[in-house]
Length: 382
Image 1 (tube, rainbow, N blue to C red):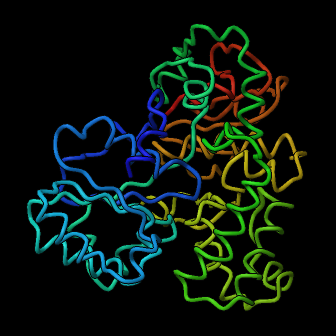
Image 2: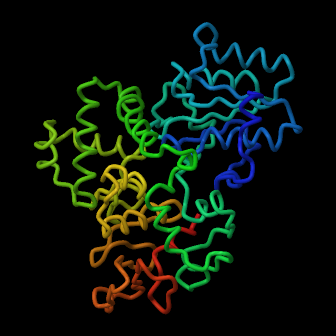
Image 3: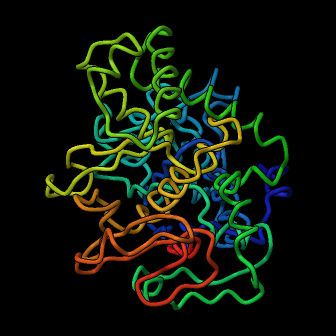
């Protein structure tokens, strides 16, 4: 732990660092691979270790081949431990049962654990959902990318701030070149370490070949079907899913398709845009399937993603974190009372001119006016 703490960067922290109620007795943080969950835990220890006795462990450490989490927690508390951070908890068998036991037996111990975004703790054998405050961490926003890589720091803005043209970025005279860089590889913090395409290949492989099958108890042959599905989606997205065609193309039952799509969505590989018929967030009918984020889309497309699709993917990816984004019957997206039409620099107003609250989102422009808003500014919502 001490060696890791010496190396953890402290100049930039993720958006969620300020949103988590760190004083809660149990906190769970899920998210796709590579978005910075481990770094966030280590940064928390660096900044607050004088306030208690902290211990960070990774659940796949060889220590746990002969010891249990419960043993570790018992020994730690006896030494005066106050805060136990368990990284990648999903790699430890019966993790939810033991965390529940630790929570119940040691009421003075604060526990923070991270896990794959595929996990649904409500289905765990031990009911952690009543004990743990759960947070879901997304990848970098364009705003965070600028802060992390170029020390250009501005606060997050609401949708209304963006639509009212209140985005001001001192030190960024021409945003489009850095915006293009963000789209190609800026969603993942590890891009700054180099070898981005290789690392992304590893993230995709581990997610589909390990994380999802481990959680869903899948056979290797089923995991290969997931990989085929992701390949098909990457080629066609965004598209309206046809369950019959998709099942024939990858060779699985039509009834399995919705389940596979849900696994890929939870794992941070795709995004499912739903309509507003569900009444609650995420319960409507799936209208379009997207690759999860523009950087993943760029990798899956061999560095040559379709520009129009990339624009929509960026908008949906960035705005879904803080808002309920649904499919529009007349245009691309709906957020609250506003309908959004996404396009290039010459995108006209015809498609939304009779829609109250219609907004034209244009790529390749630096500044907006009226109902025309630059696409890059929607990267400042979180």
